[in-house]
Each structure stands twice: as C-alpha cells, then as structure tokens.
Image (cartoon, rainbow, N blue to C red; front, side):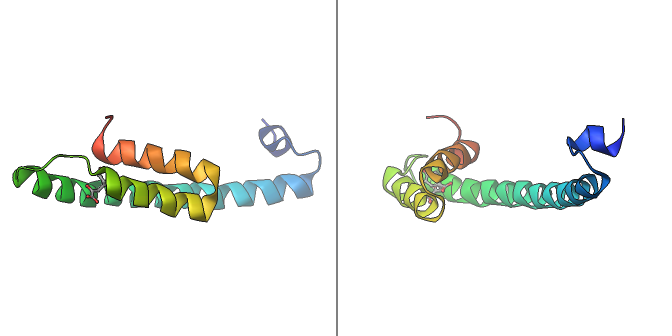
Length: 93
Ligand SMILES: O=C(O)C(=O)C[C@]1(C(=O)O)C=C[C@@H](O)C=C1
C-alpha cells in the first residue's frame, strides 16, 4: 500500500505531513494511556483506603468535582470522557 493510500492524501506532500503527524499522535496516545494507568493506580489506593476504613468504593461528591473539571476544560464531550475515566478507575456502578 502506498503512503497516499494509507493516509487518504492525494499528494506526496500531504501524505508526508499526515504520516509525521500520525507518529506524534501515536506517541501522545501512548502517554495518555500511561497517564490513565497511573491514575487508575492512584485511584485504587484511595478506594482501598476508604473501603478498608469501612467506607464505600464510590464518592459521588468527588465524582461531581472530577466531571466538572473535565467539562470546564473540554465541554460536553469532556463529561463523557470523565465518565469513561471514572469507569476505568472504579469499575461500573
Ligand atoms: O477521590 C476519591 O475519593 C476516589 O475514590 C477517586 C475516584 C477517581 O478515580 O477520581 C474514584 C472513585 C470515587 O467515586 C471518586 C473518585
């Protein structure tokens, strides 16, 4: 498959730009995934401390803060992203 076919570009110049930018996106996605995995580990520490003390896994007031943080930064899709992040960190409720 040619670079043009792989990228959907109609010129070699555009194919080069897209190929380079996709490499940066793949590197960014690797970092984002790493950060999410780090967040999951930190969240687990909190949840274990709370459950170990007799509390519940979920803290809805805190989740509202997290949802608001993402929404303020990214708009409505930010809320959906935060819900997915929370599900990754504490499982489905
Ligand atoms: O901050 C907490 O109390 C957590 O347990 C962490 C966290 C999160 O991953 O952000 C996870 C579960 C709770 O329902 C709220 C937030």
